[in-house]
Length: 79
Image 1 (tube, rainbow, N blue to C red):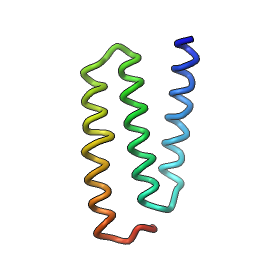
Image 2: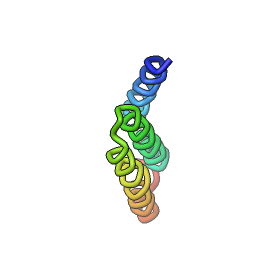
Image 3: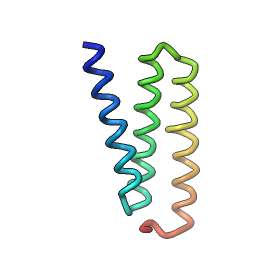
């Protein structure tokens, strides 16, 4: 069961990475990037690295998302 969960997480991670690279709407890209960070945090937790998972969740999905949304609010939303 764990192998199936890990495979699904990796598949979703790849889909998020490709979608972030291909999408033209910057706010949607930031939201997908945040979901990428959260999935990475779950994967780190599955790999028995809770300290790395907490840092990834805080920085990858939290702080960087807030900074990118603030930057988008000062520019145009569509690339």
